[in-house]
Length: 98
Image 1 (cartoon, rainbow, N blue to C red):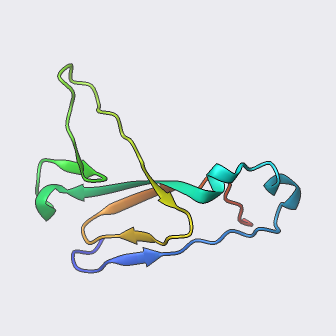
Image 2 (spheres, rainbow, N blue to C red):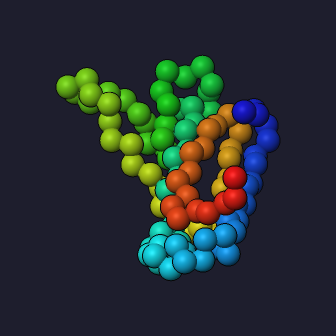
């Protein structure tokens, strides 16, 4: 985690690694990925409030964990990681050799 550097990450899978399985992945999964971008409120890393995709994560009135809804992003766009933040991305249908 950096307090001044923005990272842009591009991910490409091996389309020929499992060609017979690639046919079963639906077009929707290939066009969008789920992104969970965690940032501190107002950019203050000592804040008591954490934002998920810009929405404050606060307990509900019944003290339950709030819904954690992802942002849907075009898979062709790079993953941008802002300073003082953490990003989780779900890459559905991603194939890569071990």
